Amino acid sequence: MSDLSTRVFRAYSRISLVAQIVIGLVAGFLLAWLFPEAARSVSLLGDLFVAALKAVAPVLVFVLVTASLANHKQGQPTHIRPIMLLYAFGTLSAAVVAVIASSLFPTGLTLVSPASGVVPPAGVSAVLKTLLFNIVDNPVHALIEGNYIGILAWAIGLGFAFRHAGEATRELVGDMSNGVMLIVRVVIRFAPLGVFGLVAGTLAQSGFAVLVGYMQLLLVLVGSMLFVALVTNPLIVYWKLRRNPYPLVFTCLRESGITAFFTRSSAANIPVNMQLCERLGLHKDTYSVSIPLGATINMAGAAITITVLTLAAVNTLGIQVDVATAVLLSLLAAVCACGASGVAGGSLLLIPLACSLFGISNDLAMQVVAVGFIIGVVQDSAETALNSSTDVLFTAASCIANGDIDEGAERRV
Image (cartoon, rainbow, N blue to C red):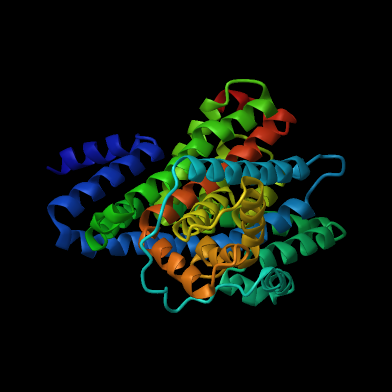
Protein backbone atom coordinates (compact mmCIF):
# COMPACT_ATOMS: atom_id res chain seq x y z
CA MET A 1 0.00 0.00 0.00
CA SER A 2 2.85 2.34 0.79
CA ASP A 3 4.33 1.72 -2.67
CA LEU A 4 1.00 2.59 -4.26
CA SER A 5 0.75 5.76 -2.18
CA THR A 6 4.28 6.73 -3.19
CA ARG A 7 3.51 6.21 -6.88
CA VAL A 8 0.30 8.23 -6.61
CA PHE A 9 2.12 11.07 -4.82
CA ARG A 10 4.89 11.12 -7.43
CA ALA A 11 2.38 11.13 -10.28
CA TYR A 12 0.44 13.96 -8.62
CA SER A 13 3.61 15.99 -8.02
CA ARG A 14 4.43 15.81 -11.74
CA ILE A 15 1.09 17.46 -12.61
CA SER A 16 1.25 21.21 -13.19
CA LEU A 17 0.16 23.50 -10.37
CA VAL A 18 -2.84 24.73 -12.36
CA ALA A 19 -4.05 21.16 -12.91
CA GLN A 20 -3.60 20.49 -9.19
CA ILE A 21 -5.72 23.55 -8.40
CA VAL A 22 -8.46 22.31 -10.76
CA ILE A 23 -8.36 18.93 -8.99
CA GLY A 24 -8.73 20.71 -5.66
CA LEU A 25 -11.64 22.73 -7.06
CA VAL A 26 -13.52 19.64 -8.27
CA ALA A 27 -12.80 17.76 -5.03
CA GLY A 28 -14.10 20.69 -2.97
CA PHE A 29 -17.29 20.87 -5.03
CA LEU A 30 -17.92 17.12 -4.66
CA LEU A 31 -17.26 17.19 -0.91
CA ALA A 32 -19.66 20.12 -0.38
CA TRP A 33 -22.31 18.36 -2.48
CA LEU A 34 -22.00 14.89 -0.93
CA PHE A 35 -20.82 15.63 2.63
CA PRO A 36 -21.66 19.25 3.56
CA GLU A 37 -20.82 18.79 7.25
CA ALA A 38 -17.34 17.52 6.42
CA ALA A 39 -16.94 20.37 3.94
CA ARG A 40 -17.52 22.94 6.68
CA SER A 41 -14.66 21.48 8.69
CA VAL A 42 -12.13 21.60 5.82
CA SER A 43 -12.85 25.29 5.24
CA LEU A 44 -9.99 25.84 7.71
CA LEU A 45 -7.57 24.88 4.90
CA GLY A 46 -8.89 27.69 2.73
CA ASP A 47 -8.79 30.21 5.59
CA LEU A 48 -5.19 29.28 6.37
CA PHE A 49 -4.14 29.61 2.72
CA VAL A 50 -5.71 33.05 2.31
CA ALA A 51 -4.22 34.17 5.64
CA ALA A 52 -0.76 33.00 4.52
CA LEU A 53 -1.06 34.89 1.23
CA LYS A 54 -2.24 38.04 2.98
CA ALA A 55 0.61 37.73 5.49
CA VAL A 56 3.36 37.42 2.90
CA ALA A 57 1.97 39.91 0.35
CA PRO A 58 2.75 43.19 2.19
CA VAL A 59 6.33 42.10 2.96
CA LEU A 60 6.77 40.85 -0.61
CA VAL A 61 5.61 44.15 -2.13
CA PHE A 62 7.73 46.24 0.22
CA VAL A 63 10.94 44.25 -0.23
CA LEU A 64 10.57 43.51 -3.94
CA VAL A 65 9.78 47.10 -4.98
CA THR A 66 12.60 48.45 -2.78
CA ALA A 67 15.10 45.94 -4.18
CA SER A 68 14.05 46.51 -7.80
CA LEU A 69 14.47 50.27 -7.56
CA ALA A 70 17.66 50.09 -5.50
CA ASN A 71 19.35 47.73 -7.96
CA HIS A 72 17.85 49.25 -11.11
CA LYS A 73 20.52 49.79 -13.76
CA GLN A 74 20.72 53.23 -15.31
CA GLY A 75 19.27 53.21 -18.83
CA GLN A 76 17.15 50.09 -18.26
CA PRO A 77 13.52 51.08 -19.10
CA THR A 78 10.68 49.86 -16.88
CA HIS A 79 7.73 50.92 -19.10
CA ILE A 80 5.49 51.67 -16.10
CA ARG A 81 3.77 54.56 -17.90
CA PRO A 82 2.38 52.42 -20.77
CA ILE A 83 1.08 49.91 -18.23
CA MET A 84 -0.65 52.68 -16.28
CA LEU A 85 -2.28 53.87 -19.49
CA LEU A 86 -3.50 50.33 -20.18
CA TYR A 87 -4.92 50.17 -16.65
CA ALA A 88 -6.81 53.43 -17.18
CA PHE A 89 -8.05 52.51 -20.65
CA GLY A 90 -9.12 49.06 -19.45
CA THR A 91 -11.16 50.61 -16.62
CA LEU A 92 -12.84 53.03 -19.04
CA SER A 93 -13.63 50.18 -21.43
CA ALA A 94 -15.13 48.12 -18.60
CA ALA A 95 -17.36 51.04 -17.56
CA VAL A 96 -18.59 51.44 -21.16
CA VAL A 97 -19.33 47.71 -21.40
CA ALA A 98 -21.27 47.84 -18.12
CA VAL A 99 -23.36 50.81 -19.30
CA ILE A 100 -24.19 49.09 -22.60
CA ALA A 101 -25.08 45.84 -20.82
CA SER A 102 -27.30 47.69 -18.33
CA SER A 103 -29.02 49.48 -21.22
CA LEU A 104 -29.61 46.27 -23.20
CA PHE A 105 -30.76 44.28 -20.16
CA PRO A 106 -32.31 46.77 -17.70
CA THR A 107 -32.49 45.25 -14.24
CA GLY A 108 -34.65 46.12 -11.26
CA LEU A 109 -33.87 45.45 -7.61
CA THR A 110 -35.93 44.12 -4.76
CA LEU A 111 -34.53 46.40 -2.10
CA VAL A 112 -33.77 44.80 1.26
CA SER A 113 -32.73 46.00 4.69
CA PRO A 114 -29.73 48.33 4.63
CA ALA A 115 -26.32 46.75 5.12
CA SER A 116 -25.28 47.08 8.74
CA GLY A 117 -21.80 47.72 10.06
CA VAL A 118 -20.48 49.40 6.91
CA VAL A 119 -19.80 53.09 6.40
CA PRO A 120 -19.44 54.32 2.79
CA PRO A 121 -17.29 57.32 1.90
CA ALA A 122 -19.13 60.64 2.38
CA GLY A 123 -17.99 61.91 -1.02
CA VAL A 124 -15.14 62.18 -3.48
CA SER A 125 -13.24 64.47 -1.10
CA ALA A 126 -13.41 61.82 1.65
CA VAL A 127 -12.01 59.19 -0.73
CA LEU A 128 -9.15 61.46 -1.81
CA LYS A 129 -8.46 62.37 1.82
CA THR A 130 -8.22 58.66 2.72
CA LEU A 131 -5.88 58.14 -0.23
CA LEU A 132 -3.56 60.96 0.88
CA PHE A 133 -3.44 59.75 4.48
CA ASN A 134 -2.73 56.20 3.26
CA ILE A 135 0.27 57.53 1.34
CA VAL A 136 1.83 59.13 4.45
CA ASP A 137 1.00 56.24 6.78
CA ASN A 138 3.65 54.90 9.16
CA PRO A 139 5.49 52.11 7.29
CA VAL A 140 5.15 49.59 10.14
CA HIS A 141 1.44 50.35 10.47
CA ALA A 142 1.03 50.10 6.69
CA LEU A 143 2.63 46.65 6.69
CA ILE A 144 0.50 45.45 9.60
CA GLU A 145 -2.77 46.78 8.15
CA GLY A 146 -2.03 45.84 4.54
CA ASN A 147 -2.18 49.46 3.35
CA TYR A 148 -0.63 48.95 -0.09
CA ILE A 149 -0.71 52.62 -1.03
CA GLY A 150 1.47 53.39 1.99
CA ILE A 151 3.66 50.34 1.41
CA LEU A 152 4.30 51.39 -2.18
CA ALA A 153 5.07 54.97 -1.16
CA TRP A 154 7.70 53.87 1.39
CA ALA A 155 9.12 51.15 -0.88
CA ILE A 156 9.55 53.60 -3.77
CA GLY A 157 11.13 56.21 -1.47
CA LEU A 158 13.57 53.75 0.09
CA GLY A 159 14.32 52.19 -3.29
CA PHE A 160 15.48 55.50 -4.73
CA ALA A 161 17.37 56.31 -1.52
CA PHE A 162 19.22 52.96 -1.58
CA ARG A 163 20.47 53.70 -5.09
CA HIS A 164 23.08 55.85 -3.36
CA ALA A 165 23.92 53.17 -0.79
CA GLY A 166 26.95 50.91 -0.89
CA GLU A 167 27.10 47.79 -3.03
CA ALA A 168 26.86 45.53 0.03
CA THR A 169 23.65 47.24 1.19
CA ARG A 170 22.02 46.86 -2.22
CA GLU A 171 23.07 43.21 -2.37
CA LEU A 172 21.51 42.66 1.06
CA VAL A 173 18.22 44.16 -0.11
CA GLY A 174 18.35 41.95 -3.20
CA ASP A 175 19.01 38.85 -1.07
CA MET A 176 16.04 39.74 1.14
CA SER A 177 13.90 39.98 -1.98
CA ASN A 178 15.02 36.54 -3.13
CA GLY A 179 14.36 35.11 0.33
CA VAL A 180 10.81 36.44 0.44
CA MET A 181 10.16 35.10 -3.06
CA LEU A 182 11.25 31.64 -1.87
CA ILE A 183 8.70 31.81 0.95
CA VAL A 184 6.07 32.88 -1.59
CA ARG A 185 6.81 29.84 -3.75
CA VAL A 186 6.34 27.56 -0.74
CA VAL A 187 3.00 29.18 0.13
CA ILE A 188 1.73 28.94 -3.45
CA ARG A 189 2.53 25.23 -3.55
CA PHE A 190 -0.32 24.81 -1.05
CA ALA A 191 -2.78 26.49 -3.43
CA PRO A 192 -4.54 23.19 -4.37
CA LEU A 193 -5.32 22.50 -0.69
CA GLY A 194 -6.33 26.11 -0.18
CA VAL A 195 -8.73 26.13 -3.13
CA PHE A 196 -10.13 22.78 -1.98
CA GLY A 197 -10.94 24.24 1.43
CA LEU A 198 -12.29 27.51 0.03
CA VAL A 199 -14.65 25.83 -2.45
CA ALA A 200 -15.90 23.22 0.00
CA GLY A 201 -16.43 25.73 2.82
CA THR A 202 -18.12 28.38 0.67
CA LEU A 203 -20.55 25.98 -1.00
CA ALA A 204 -21.37 24.20 2.26
CA GLN A 205 -21.99 27.39 4.24
CA SER A 206 -23.60 29.70 1.67
CA GLY A 207 -24.80 27.61 -1.24
CA PHE A 208 -26.36 29.30 -4.24
CA ALA A 209 -30.05 29.10 -3.36
CA VAL A 210 -30.03 32.67 -2.07
CA LEU A 211 -28.74 33.88 -5.44
CA VAL A 212 -31.67 32.63 -7.54
CA GLY A 213 -33.75 35.74 -6.85
CA TYR A 214 -30.96 37.94 -8.23
CA MET A 215 -30.15 35.79 -11.23
CA GLN A 216 -30.71 38.49 -13.88
CA LEU A 217 -28.56 40.98 -11.98
CA LEU A 218 -25.83 38.37 -11.62
CA LEU A 219 -26.03 37.49 -15.30
CA VAL A 220 -25.57 41.16 -16.26
CA LEU A 221 -22.66 41.54 -13.81
CA VAL A 222 -20.83 38.32 -14.63
CA GLY A 223 -21.67 38.57 -18.31
CA SER A 224 -20.12 42.04 -18.48
CA MET A 225 -17.01 40.81 -16.71
CA LEU A 226 -16.70 37.83 -19.04
CA PHE A 227 -17.13 40.12 -22.05
CA VAL A 228 -14.33 42.36 -20.78
CA ALA A 229 -12.08 39.37 -20.01
CA LEU A 230 -12.69 37.54 -23.30
CA VAL A 231 -13.39 40.33 -25.80
CA THR A 232 -12.43 43.82 -24.63
CA ASN A 233 -9.11 42.95 -22.98
CA PRO A 234 -8.00 40.74 -25.89
CA LEU A 235 -8.75 43.62 -28.28
CA ILE A 236 -6.60 45.95 -26.15
CA VAL A 237 -3.78 43.39 -26.09
CA TYR A 238 -4.08 42.86 -29.85
CA TRP A 239 -3.84 46.62 -30.38
CA LYS A 240 -0.69 46.58 -28.26
CA LEU A 241 0.97 43.45 -29.72
CA ARG A 242 -0.61 43.08 -33.19
CA ARG A 243 -0.86 39.30 -32.79
CA ASN A 244 -3.26 36.66 -31.43
CA PRO A 245 -3.82 37.71 -27.80
CA TYR A 246 -5.69 34.66 -26.56
CA PRO A 247 -2.75 32.44 -25.53
CA LEU A 248 -1.64 35.20 -23.15
CA VAL A 249 -5.23 35.98 -22.08
CA PHE A 250 -6.00 32.35 -21.24
CA THR A 251 -2.68 31.95 -19.41
CA CYS A 252 -3.48 34.91 -17.16
CA LEU A 253 -7.06 33.79 -16.55
CA ARG A 254 -5.99 30.23 -15.82
CA GLU A 255 -3.01 30.91 -13.57
CA SER A 256 -4.13 34.17 -11.92
CA GLY A 257 -7.88 34.45 -12.35
CA ILE A 258 -8.77 31.04 -10.92
CA THR A 259 -6.83 31.63 -7.70
CA ALA A 260 -8.16 35.19 -7.36
CA PHE A 261 -11.73 33.96 -7.85
CA PHE A 262 -11.52 31.83 -4.74
CA THR A 263 -9.31 34.01 -2.55
CA ARG A 264 -11.50 37.05 -3.38
CA SER A 265 -8.61 39.35 -2.57
CA SER A 266 -6.40 41.21 -5.03
CA ALA A 267 -3.87 41.76 -2.24
CA ALA A 268 -3.72 38.05 -1.47
CA ASN A 269 -3.22 37.34 -5.18
CA ILE A 270 -0.17 39.61 -5.50
CA PRO A 271 2.28 36.73 -4.73
CA VAL A 272 0.53 34.55 -7.33
CA ASN A 273 0.81 37.29 -9.95
CA MET A 274 4.45 37.95 -9.10
CA GLN A 275 5.33 34.31 -9.61
CA LEU A 276 3.39 34.18 -12.89
CA CYS A 277 5.27 37.24 -14.17
CA GLU A 278 8.53 35.55 -13.23
CA ARG A 279 7.55 32.38 -15.14
CA LEU A 280 6.57 34.47 -18.15
CA GLY A 281 10.06 35.96 -18.17
CA LEU A 282 8.95 39.55 -17.63
CA HIS A 283 11.47 42.06 -16.35
CA LYS A 284 11.55 42.16 -12.56
CA ASP A 285 12.01 45.93 -12.37
CA THR A 286 8.73 46.36 -14.23
CA TYR A 287 6.37 43.80 -12.70
CA SER A 288 7.58 44.35 -9.13
CA VAL A 289 6.04 47.83 -9.35
CA SER A 290 3.16 47.34 -11.81
CA ILE A 291 1.60 44.32 -10.06
CA PRO A 292 1.13 45.91 -6.61
CA LEU A 293 0.04 49.12 -8.32
CA GLY A 294 -2.51 47.18 -10.34
CA ALA A 295 -3.83 45.51 -7.18
CA THR A 296 -4.74 48.94 -5.83
CA ILE A 297 -5.70 51.02 -8.88
CA ASN A 298 -6.62 48.65 -11.74
CA MET A 299 -10.37 48.55 -11.13
CA ALA A 300 -12.10 47.18 -14.23
CA GLY A 301 -14.19 44.78 -12.16
CA ALA A 302 -15.07 47.53 -9.68
CA ALA A 303 -16.15 49.79 -12.56
CA ILE A 304 -18.56 47.09 -13.73
CA THR A 305 -19.93 46.40 -10.24
CA ILE A 306 -20.50 50.08 -9.40
CA THR A 307 -22.02 50.87 -12.80
CA VAL A 308 -24.37 47.88 -13.01
CA LEU A 309 -25.67 48.13 -9.44
CA THR A 310 -26.04 51.91 -9.59
CA LEU A 311 -27.90 51.79 -12.90
CA ALA A 312 -30.06 48.97 -11.51
CA ALA A 313 -31.05 51.31 -8.67
CA VAL A 314 -31.65 54.10 -11.18
CA ASN A 315 -33.87 51.79 -13.26
CA THR A 316 -35.76 50.61 -10.16
CA LEU A 317 -36.60 54.20 -9.20
CA GLY A 318 -37.50 55.18 -12.79
CA ILE A 319 -34.79 57.85 -13.06
CA GLN A 320 -33.80 58.85 -16.58
CA VAL A 321 -30.10 59.38 -17.22
CA ASP A 322 -28.08 59.73 -20.42
CA VAL A 323 -25.41 57.17 -21.25
CA ALA A 324 -22.54 59.66 -21.29
CA THR A 325 -23.29 60.78 -17.74
CA ALA A 326 -23.57 57.18 -16.54
CA VAL A 327 -20.16 56.31 -18.02
CA LEU A 328 -18.57 59.44 -16.55
CA LEU A 329 -19.96 58.90 -13.06
CA SER A 330 -19.20 55.17 -12.90
CA LEU A 331 -15.65 55.81 -14.10
CA LEU A 332 -15.21 58.50 -11.44
CA ALA A 333 -16.31 56.06 -8.75
CA ALA A 334 -14.05 53.29 -10.10
CA VAL A 335 -10.99 55.54 -10.20
CA CYS A 336 -11.70 56.75 -6.67
CA ALA A 337 -12.00 53.12 -5.51
CA CYS A 338 -8.23 52.96 -5.00
CA GLY A 339 -8.70 55.28 -2.02
CA ALA A 340 -11.19 52.90 -0.41
CA SER A 341 -9.45 49.65 -1.38
CA GLY A 342 -8.48 48.83 2.20
CA VAL A 343 -12.06 49.15 3.52
CA ALA A 344 -14.16 46.01 3.96
CA GLY A 345 -16.71 45.83 1.17
CA GLY A 346 -14.41 47.15 -1.54
CA SER A 347 -16.23 48.50 -4.56
CA LEU A 348 -19.68 48.06 -2.95
CA LEU A 349 -18.99 50.98 -0.61
CA LEU A 350 -18.55 53.27 -3.62
CA ILE A 351 -22.16 52.64 -4.72
CA PRO A 352 -23.69 55.29 -2.38
CA LEU A 353 -21.20 57.79 -3.77
CA ALA A 354 -22.30 57.00 -7.34
CA CYS A 355 -25.97 56.92 -6.38
CA SER A 356 -25.76 60.35 -4.75
CA LEU A 357 -24.82 61.82 -8.11
CA PHE A 358 -28.23 60.69 -9.38
CA GLY A 359 -30.03 62.19 -6.38
CA ILE A 360 -30.63 58.78 -4.73
CA SER A 361 -30.75 59.04 -0.94
CA ASN A 362 -28.14 57.31 1.22
CA ASP A 363 -30.79 55.07 2.83
CA LEU A 364 -31.83 53.65 -0.55
CA ALA A 365 -28.22 53.41 -1.70
CA MET A 366 -27.31 51.35 1.38
CA GLN A 367 -30.08 48.93 0.46
CA VAL A 368 -28.36 48.51 -2.89
CA VAL A 369 -25.12 47.81 -0.99
CA ALA A 370 -26.99 45.14 1.00
CA VAL A 371 -28.03 43.49 -2.28
CA GLY A 372 -24.37 43.59 -3.30
CA PHE A 373 -23.36 41.73 -0.15
CA ILE A 374 -26.01 39.07 -0.80
CA ILE A 375 -24.67 38.32 -4.27
CA GLY A 376 -21.08 38.96 -3.18
CA VAL A 377 -20.19 35.27 -3.12
CA VAL A 378 -20.26 35.42 -6.95
CA GLN A 379 -19.89 39.15 -7.68
CA ASP A 380 -16.81 39.74 -5.55
CA SER A 381 -15.14 36.55 -6.78
CA ALA A 382 -15.67 37.40 -10.46
CA GLU A 383 -14.63 41.02 -9.89
CA THR A 384 -11.39 40.01 -8.17
CA ALA A 385 -10.58 37.43 -10.84
CA LEU A 386 -10.99 40.06 -13.58
CA ASN A 387 -9.01 42.74 -11.73
CA SER A 388 -6.13 40.48 -10.73
CA SER A 389 -5.72 38.60 -14.03
CA THR A 390 -5.81 41.92 -15.91
CA ASP A 391 -2.88 43.18 -13.82
CA VAL A 392 -0.67 40.42 -15.26
CA LEU A 393 -2.21 40.63 -18.73
CA PHE A 394 -1.50 44.32 -19.24
CA THR A 395 1.93 44.10 -17.61
CA ALA A 396 2.88 41.20 -19.89
CA ALA A 397 1.47 42.89 -23.00
CA SER A 398 3.45 46.06 -22.33
CA CYS A 399 6.65 44.17 -21.55
CA ILE A 400 6.38 42.01 -24.69
CA ALA A 401 5.57 45.01 -26.89
CA ASN A 402 8.64 46.86 -25.62
CA GLY A 403 10.96 43.82 -25.60
CA ASP A 404 11.25 44.07 -21.79
CA ILE A 405 11.43 40.28 -21.34
CA ASP A 406 14.01 37.54 -20.87
CA GLU A 407 15.31 35.55 -23.80
CA GLY A 408 12.96 32.71 -24.70
CA ALA A 409 10.03 34.26 -22.87
CA GLU A 410 8.04 34.67 -26.09
CA ARG A 411 7.74 30.90 -26.36
CA ARG A 412 6.11 30.69 -22.89
CA VAL A 413 3.15 32.79 -23.96
